[in-house]
Every structure is written in structure tokens, then in C-alpha cells.
Image (tube, rainbow, N blue to C red; front, side, top):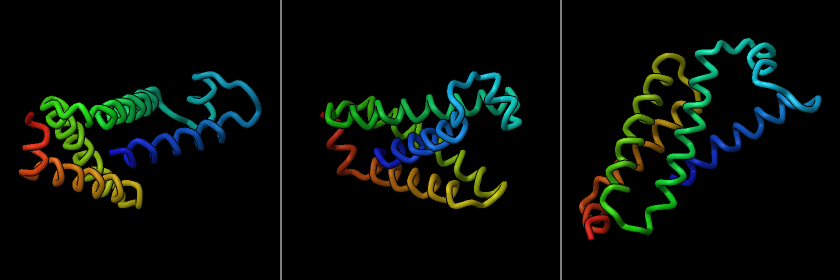
Length: 120
């Protein structure tokens, strides 16, 4: 899950550096400069929220609480849906990577060893 946190953060950093080359920039400037519709901007914010949630869950693994595993499975399920939709609608390396990483995490969290480890 840490890889799933690091890659979007790197993407957000590159995007913000690209958009902020000339100094301070506002949300209106971002929407206007790259032709981003308000709906896509909301999806962008949801991507940031998902990244933060994934980071919180990854940081909570050491607590070994059952809710962490269940929440991680739910978030990863949504990531599989997102990656699958992205791959079907326009296959790209990013959507394939998202799909594969989420699948690996779901597989690992579904193993009996993981269930026993989180069920303390």
C-alpha cells in the first residue's frame, strides 16, 4: 500500500510543479489553464483523499486491528474498479499499475495468514 501512496504523491508533486512554474496559482487558474472541468477537479480532490486514506491505513497496519484490514479491502476494491475502468476505457500504464497493485494487496489481505494476523 505504501507504493500506492508514493506514486500518486509523486504525480501530484509533478503536476503542481508543472502548474506552478510562474509563482502562486489559484484553483480557478488550474481549472482554466488546463481545461479541467469542475467535475474532473472534484475527481482530482477525491484522488488526493483516497491517497491520504490509503496512507492512514498503511500506517495503521501495525495496530493489527480487524477494521484496518476490512477498510483496506474496501479501499482496494474501489481501486480495482477504478483501475479496471481506466484500463478498459483507455489502456495506460498507470491504470494497469493501479489494477495490478490493488489486486496484489487484496490477494495478500485475503490470505488466511493475513486474516489470522489482523484478528488478534
